[in-house]
Length: 335
Image 1 (spheres, rainbow, N blue to C red):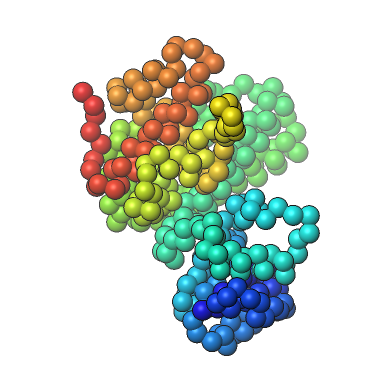
Image 2 (tube, helix red, strand yellow):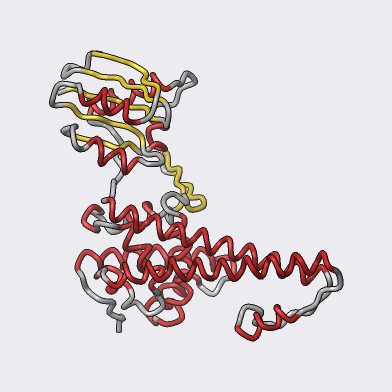
């Protein structure tokens, strides 16, 4: 068995190869695209395993390497930096370190979803970016109206509010041009989001996981599909508490010699899912007495514990979601 460490970039790739005894066999740097790197790896005698860090396009590279390698391992880039913290760093050294980790079977592995699941995740993230752009356009319109002292209706983005926006006449031509272009951007953003949402709805209709999660009152299709897509295979979480660390909802911890210091949440993992779940938790608290009781038990009626209680409730809700996906059970409200 050969152990191959890769440090992959778009135009260069450093390769370090170890034999079954952990001795260096070959080290090289290939300049060019992925095709040249893959052509070189195809010439290696079987069997061989390969390790590289997760980065942009890591899923496609995983699929391509799986055709020839007996084992493909994708390393967590954040955790490998912690293992090999050094002031001397380059591509060749990184490839060597990855090969050694693979030989020692000490690679901090990341989950690689299927191509279909990756496409679903990418569409969810794309919709999130479109929504953020629309929010920026809305904020620009509000700022424009405020700068000219225009009093706005409360429901500015309703049908009546949109009609009012179209009818407002600003005092000079420069402001009117900005207003027209921003309204055009808003209409375009709405149409793009509607198109992506329709595609996501079609995918969600065929997903049993999304259907199960939506049995929780307050969890809509966008939150349910994001959680289902990023959990992917529920059985890969051996403990339900691990889901909080995966989505970055657990506090930073520094424990030593009997002292335990807890900080802010780690914010690791997909930020889009974390945002959707925390926002949806407010609605779930309002509609589910058992969730509200959990929130109030942590809140204690204190203003300074409101956010702490919200994050803790979101964490607990994610554990419930994971358990539901593992068993296929619908939400059952506690007596």
